[in-house]
Image (cartoon, rainbow, N blue to C red):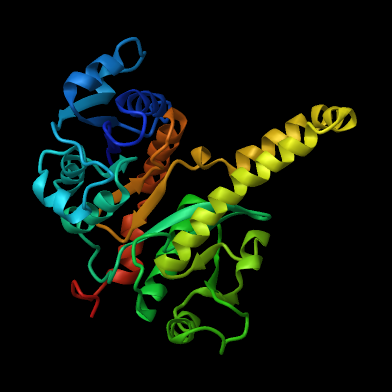
Amino acid sequence: MKRDVIIAVDAMGGDHGPKVAVEGAVAALEDANISKIILVGRESEIRPALRGLSYDEGRIGVVHAEEVIGVEEAPTTAIKAKKDSSIVVGLRLVKDGHAAAFVSAGSTGAVLAGATTIVGRIRGIKRPALGVILPSAAGYFFLVDAGANVDAKPEYLLQFAQMGSVYMEAIMDVASPRVGLINVGAEQEKGNALTKEAYGLLEGGGLNFVGNVEGREIPLGTVDVAVCDAFVGNIILKYSEGFAKGLMSMLKEELMADGMSKIGALLSKKAYGRMRKRFDYTEVGGAPFIGLKGLVVKAHGSSNAKTIKNAVKQCSKFITTDVVGKIEEKIGEGRDEDGI
């Protein structure tokens, strides 16, 4: 039996308010696999944002949540105190089975804290992880963990790699994804205690493990899944975002520097557009928090409607390909909640 694809969207999260979230959610209905999208937040702000948009009213719902968690609030405290916030209400929709996924551009800390405590881990998963798709010379790679577990253990990295492999196979259609452990050198003996022990676990973990990978090799397409703790991963992620913006700015400056360059820029306009698209995070939509009993996707705080649309569509494929079930099958069988 085909599963209903119902996705909840935090209409209050992000820098641009309900208008962007609502427009992106409605645009995502072009995906015929999506049964329904539930907009979560203040109904008094959501309903006006829906006016003037063309959509199937049977496929859009609104669940009222009066409170909003700000990015400046302590995540765990806010999750406990604001039970009627859009983040908590949206996550509870997933926990209670009313939605299979939740998308939010709100407070990263609150989304991650709430996802772990409300939605809960898959049986056997020691720590859920935040993964993000980034461009490389060969296409894209999945960076995991990109922000959830700053202090990691070797066995966490093994599970990150296993979950990342499942994700790349199911979502990005990569057969036998190449897994690399981010390290300061390619040799097995390089690195700190964490990476040295993790290397052995990854080697015997039933993965297509290609060994250590240095930072300079990752953008060249040498791996499909790049594994690390969140301290390293978040630095890589933030540097990549800044580098992409800086590179495009420098390229534009040089292309506009003189007459001949401007002619060259005009001739290469399409190529320049394709390059910008590859570095554009709005094309991917958001970062999945994998290892949970349901799907939670964290979109960028500055997300526009296109970002939300693509985040929702990413959820649709995640659900229809049953990534949660595949992770359960690969990791969770026969283990208790602590992964023993």
